[in-house]
Image (tube, rainbow, N blue to C red):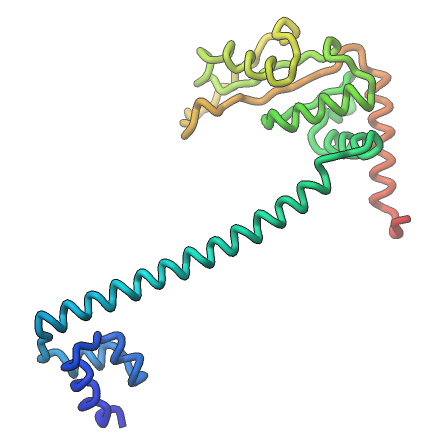
Amino acid sequence: MKFNLKPRAIRLRQQGFSISDIAKKLTIAESTVSLWCRKINLTNKQQKELENRTNRKLQNFFKLVKKQKEKRDKIKTKLFKIASKKTEKLSKRELFIAGVSLYWAEGFKHVAEGRIGFCNSDPTMMKFMIRFLNECLDVKNEEISPRLTVNQEFKDRVQNIEKFWADFLEIPINQFTKPFFQKARLVKHYEHPENYHGVLRIHVRKSSKLLLQMRGYLEGLKSFALKRNIS
C-alpha cells in the first residue's frame, strides 16, 4: 500500500515540494520520502521557491510563538496585579498577624534566647519586619541592634554592605555591632557580587518581656493551626 504512494511522492518532489511537506501530505515517514526521492534534483528555481516557503513557514511560526507568549505574559501580568492589590495595603491587625507569622518562620525562638531577634538576607523582608516592630510592638529604631554576616570573600566590602543596610532600613550605622565573617571550606563565586548583601541579624535591646509576649503570640497561632474549624 505504501509503495502505491511512491509515484505521487516523486511527482510532488519534482514539483518542488520539500521532503517534510510530502511526508505530511501522504502521511508517511520523511525517511521513506527521502529514500524514494533521493535521485531527484530540484532546479535552482525550485530550490529558491522551497527556501522561500521554508522561510515563510518559519516567520509564521515565530509570529505564532510571539503571539502566544504575549498572550501568556498578558495573563501573567493581570494575575500578578490582581494578587498584588490584595496584599499591598494592610490594616494594623493584618500587619500584626503577618509579622507574627513571619517571626514564626524566621525569628529567633530558641529557649535560651533572651531578646527579640530576626534574621534574613532579603532586604525587603527585613524592612517589613522592622515596620512590624515599629507599628505593632512599639519598638523604636534606636532600640534595634543589627549585625551583618558576610562571606569572607566580601571582607573588603563589608563597610559598603553595612551602609547599604543602614540606608535601606534607616538605621544609623553606629548601631551595627561587629560583623561576622563566614568562613566557607569552598570559596563560593557569586554571579553578581554587586548584588550580594550578606545576611542581617537584628536584635531588639532589652526586649525579654517582649519576647515572652511573642512566644504567646506564636502559641496562639499554633493553637489556631490545630483547630479543625475556622470561624
